[in-house]
Amino acid sequence: MFSGASNFVQGVDTAFVFIISIAAFFLIGITIVMVWFVFRYSRQRNPVASDIPGNNTLEIIWTLIPTILVLAMFWVGFKGFMPMRSFPEDAKTIRVLSRMWSWTFEYPNGKRSTELYLQVNDTVILDMVSEDVLHSLYIPAFRVKEDVVPGRTNRMWFVPQLVGTYDLYCAEYCGLLHAQMITKVNVLEPDDFAEWYESDIDPSAMGFEEAGYEAMQIHGCFTCHSTDGTQRVGSTFLDLYGSTVEVVAGGRTRSRLVDDDYIRRKTFDPNQEVRVGYTPGLMPSYRDQISNEEMANMIIYLKSISKYGR
Ligand SMILES: [Cu+2]
Picture (cartoon, protein in one colour):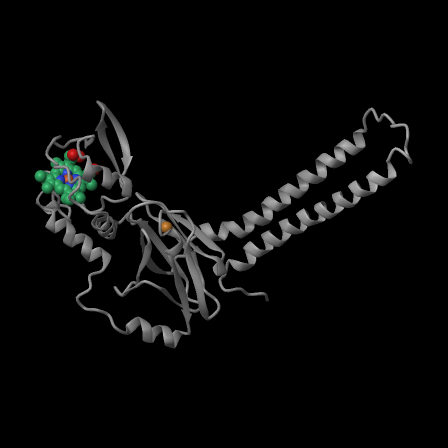
């Protein structure tokens, strides 16, 4: 069976070849007919133009055939796309932090790298956050591309199937050095991967989760928010991320999903929306005090202590 550098190569390439073949067929076909008409119906050969009032059979044909073709293109594309959106249960999750203009990857054991290291045939999910602006993680050889949007976590998954080194780009213009936001994906044999994975773990280097906890401690969030379900003046952070809360905003009660964006808004502009049942004005604004990196780590930490997960 045909196999590519990832499990998605076949689906994407099938759609691509299918669509480009149809386009090429019509490009060549229409060009040939056009050139032929130029000669066949020129003024010398066909001095008197004929008037054709209408032809239902022709109209039906040239409506029906393109409709079928377009639906077929949709179907082939959809079949390649759907698997990308249904995430596997048993996959290794690698966290991706993007910023102007570099990438950091963090593995389940806490190891970090600036190039992405993968084990061949090992399914991975990338959990991607941005510290600043919109980026897009693109691995052409794997046929995967997904925007990394500030204020939310986007995910992608794939199975690298061929040992080798591939390019990984930022595919969303993100400022001056966007073109240098490029790194490598190294797909290794299991033994080589294990050797890399277990080596050089800096025991003092903090994982994103731990760094997030540390940042919250430094900024004093735990004075008012617990992490174990205990009520303080603020709500508990346990199982907060991903839950739905009631807030009062502009005098009206609304529901809000606690996502990356909500946490950012609460931290930087806390009194715009106040959780129902809590005293307004108590939570201080941390505008200009918390860096984007701290914020990203804090969100990762909040996710890690929520049963609603991502
Ligand atoms: Cu970028």
